[in-house]
Image (cartoon, rainbow, N blue to C red):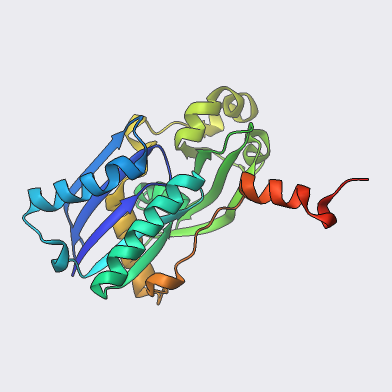
Length: 236
């Protein structure tokens, strides 16, 4: 089964091709260019390098958030269009789960954190289950770093651009309990998006492209503005 997996929910976009459990190719880039200017180019390039045609892809996978509202929309709309046009399944993967996936074969808890701006991070807490999977101990939330730190009861890996942005605050709250796994673990890699998608499929996840929904966690600025202007949201 050939899969095309992408992440556009963070600044570092990523594209990967998998053939069953085998990672065929992966491309990850932190760039100032917006995802709508580089996603399709990235897909075209990686398919060409692997010698695949888009029509050969059996299943598509995409991160659904949390993360950048614009990035999530670009990834979802692009992958939905591809899957729908080709009549192929689409699998959604939580961005935090994909970020935590490299730690599934370890023994230490992992807390992926994505910069949510406004002095907050998107975060969740996972623990390896001993069989190569992860158990979710804390569902995705958006909170100040100090409140996320209150989840920890032991040494825990913290990964993601939220760690890079708020490292000092996490260190201040957690001391030696905050473990930095290194630069290679702070970006979402599409190869792990694909791995999570395979696990989700085996668990019976939704694969209808039109039914895959974003996981924003926090309302968008547009939603907040609309609420503030509505009669029910008006202040006296």
